[in-house]
Length: 165
Image: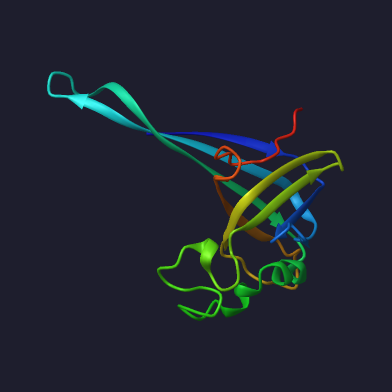
């Protein structure tokens, strides 16, 4: 069983990505959503059938979603988007951990709100833009999704800095 909590970070935001969060991903549209999901394995017994009698905590995941309206900046920050037609490339090797890829893919993601409130994830991977259509008659929105991984050097935290509101 999963329980999700969505944290909505209203824009305008400065969203940066890279080895040291050095690439600006462009202007955002509608802020960002940080989705924290806690997973539980339900324990059942013959006596109670499918009714859980207890639960085991099995972990937590974090996903960050937002929309950029600047395709050039997104492409600069994530050049492997250019080789989407290949199954395996110089930057993506099947079977290798992301942090060991030729071009590091486990990078920092930094979200700054109004120059003061900062969310910083030390290990993040761009797991997509999801499907989008390029049209000349509407604004371009590039939906980006990042998977956040725990930082083993900082007490396994998902975010090294979390602002207080």
